[in-house]
Length: 210
Image (cartoon, rainbow, N blue to C red; front, side, top):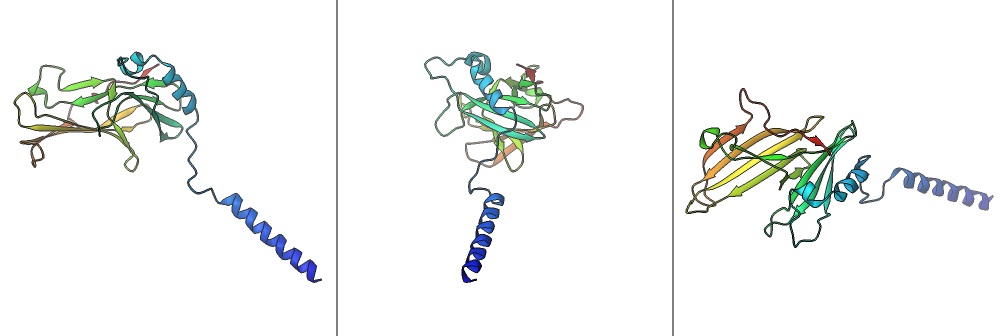
């Protein structure tokens, strides 16, 4: 009888352990990549660097680092390194997206230079095949923040921040702001909003199939 009780207890303990193993995911387990993203990454990396980056950046090894971003609902984006930048800053990357239609697309982003009145027609927005945009996981937004100046005798600096989110077919612009500082590190002395803008459409270029 005693041996039967011991065996029963052991069986219960084993069942409990097996149940725990089945229901508890291993610590640090990575989330699976969105369906189709591995094939998309392979296809992007197989492209000539000049095609996906706008330049083959002579003298540098072919960049292969990439980040897959789960946009939800079966859609995803891929940020792929293109060429290096100054130390401490994000590398320049190309952007591709794929929605539920399964079509892989290349999407350029844009820099907001400032109000239209300051520039010749078309130069208030500057399309770019590559960017230093990064994915904000908490906000679920793609953010590109760029600081320029001082240079050419100018003492002011400008920080331009552009933000996009997935709208089901592409990454659409949420906002674009340029902040001017009289001197580097000084409080902002002027702020201009480029987007949203009344009577205007999203200036972000349409994504194109590749």
